[in-house]
Length: 305
Image (cartoon, rainbow, N blue to C red; front, top):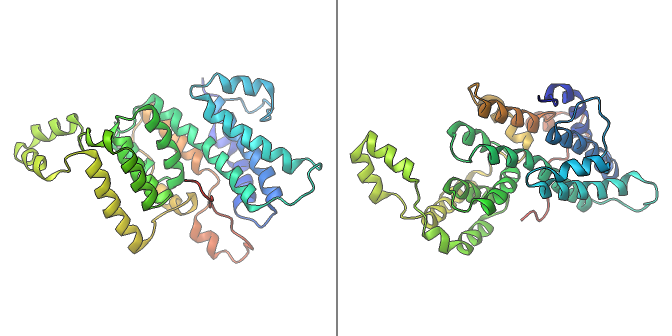
């Protein structure tokens, strides 16, 4: 039985995210509020009933976290958020709370959000559902990057993870970082076909002539495919910029085409995670045109790569 329901936290999440990202409060106040939002994420990860009171430092919560698959992602993030949250909540610390400290806390928050997708793709293999892949690609690059870095370490032979990771690295970091990753992994990428055997077989069954053409036109391996992607997509980014870089700019695209159609458990669980990730977010254009907003703090993290 699922105890956590997104709808029950809609108002609270909207208030907390608004205070963290869309108002001109101090970094001290933002980090303190961010810790409250992190508690909502932990509630969802652990599927805790709304009536139960929790804190990030509670020993029962810490024990429950250690029982999770890949628990270290959550534990590390919670420890980072708890440390920064304690510093900003208690009056013992009287110094300035800086933008750098806020960015560190945000990075921990993004790790926590990324765990929801990591957990999902541990259950449903990455790359097997095209609609899920499309919707996943609408997420902010930093979230995709964190998820894919983790998945690649566990599943280095999954060409779908590699393909998406290269693009996420390009968009979350830069072309130099993405190129370095390709070169660092050149030996293994050269050994991988650019397209899966299932894909090649499917094309061959549908159109043998097309399959023969693709054999000669397609990149010979994942190394070349990744380099081609960097060149092509990198040129588009240099010319037009990123289509979306954060939740706020991605939100209208998600609302328009992000929800996956279907009623299978795989689809329902994915939509539930995605709805939670976007819960409480507001569109960037509306934020920037709102004259009553004295400050808009959007998701800028320094040195993420």
